Length: 92
Image (cartoon, rainbow, N blue to C red; front, side, top):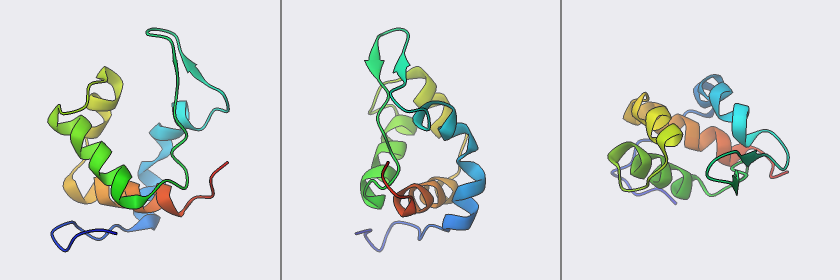
């Protein structure tokens, strides 16, 4: 559940923004080349978790060059919209 201080996400706009996410997170059993790890599935995750994770990448509290770059390119509302859309997707 989102706290009142967090923006309400617009899943329709999030769908438009999420095209970049699918490049890694939309590939079944995708593994990053270096460092080698499995890319997590994000469809169907809790909206609050997704929003907090995206903010943490943007703020530098979570470290991953690609995710930090992606998250920093979005506004606060964009992050809320992405989280709303991804949470609305069926887990695969």
